[in-house]
Length: 620
Ligand code: DMJ
Image 1 (spheres, rainbow, N blue to C red):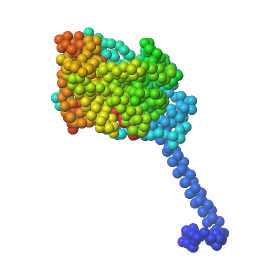
Image 2: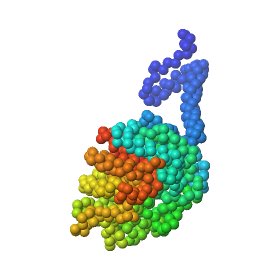
Image 3: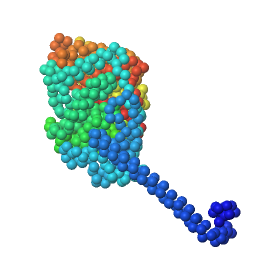
Image 4: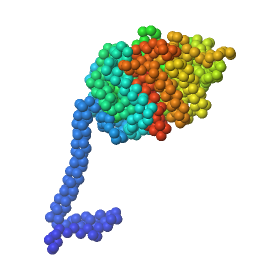
């Protein structure tokens, strides 16, 4: 014992050098210690060890507490309808003004684990039958199956919600007022139904999925119509169910409903839309259960089984190749890769089929996986959006899938060399069709084909040759003229072009093709061209067409398709307002009329699906 009353441990002479001499010294000193000194040292060491173990335990318990708390939050979130797939819940529940940074990295990581569990035969999404409540059950414990290095990370280019300002000029205000008129009619006479019949003031049912309401959701957001949007959102929450035994068209339901819901989710962060989109996506997966992997055109949402349409054994080529943006986006939002895998396979199968300079016949068989030989090649109905989605898929995936770019480029060469011709007398550019396996050229162009200038301009924006932009501008002019040369300033569904020497008229339309269905394609192309070139002539052309729509299609109950664009005093209204009029036509008008310094949607970060619903561009 130290005379000063302390237990003194003299370690000052200890050397830090590791030598036998040093060990002997320590041992000698230890032996010199009294029993009390030794016991005190034992006690000290024991206390240090105890403190170490205790601290470590606390740390572990801390993690456990966080996990339990997290699980509770997840449960509450799920009970509140938040969608158990999204843990942690990074998305905002409702439309809010400040931007939300969406952490899709952690979302994808979490859900990739679910994929691993599913692939191991543990199907947590409960595909077993109709109305399966387990579709949104949190995957909970099975998550440790995924290896960190297997996780694929998908990042979007845009990292925040867009703040839409509402109309900024007279033309935009006129479009919003048109939208409100259409919406009021729909709200009053056809609420929650597929389409408004604005003259008889009743409704039309196609798939019974509230098509007009869902097609309109993101248009209302773009136009800043918050009140209307909120009411529609409530309808989706309370009334959008997919449990009726109804055959729906896979393509139409995907581009309008799945696309509309995903877009509303992207623009608001509201998980309700993603929850509904996921349920719909799950119910449509049965369409892919064919021998070849090419989907059937129809699927029953209750039984989840797919089948060919009643009128043909085949699916349309454009339909099976125009579902990829939406299903891929759904996979990346939910982290469940099954949707993307199914549609990527379709694209790959079509990629591997023989084509004429990249051009595809319009029918394909779901069982054989082959094109119907000798079917028509066209940029119009049943062919159109195959080409559009080659380009847009390539952009969507950060330009990482080479065959999409190659197929698109080759197809555009095919368009320019095989389908494009010029009229007599004015040398106007148009695109016709190839019939009977290449034996016949038909100088006929659908209004639907007028999407092509917009797509080619977008391609140019993304690195395609300047000749594509030149081609797009010329073709857009012809499309514009199909409107401008009618007294109603509205285009017919189909135009025929004269190429024979001595012709006095560039194009004409047949009585049976003289209807205008409120279609958007030309307006869509004008918008892309205005955005990309800055040329305000495209706005002026659009404004003229808008006047035609106001004058000849507006009726008390909304807007109607008409049977005859050729005679202003005998337009023969058809009593039908198509959902794409609100989803596409009015949206593209509104965007087209934006002032040049006020493009609210950055087209390098966002894509429009073929129904004008917004999908983010991913970096890979
Ligand atoms: C829309 O449903 C889509 O744009 C589709 O790609 C083609 N047809 C209509 C609009 O005309």
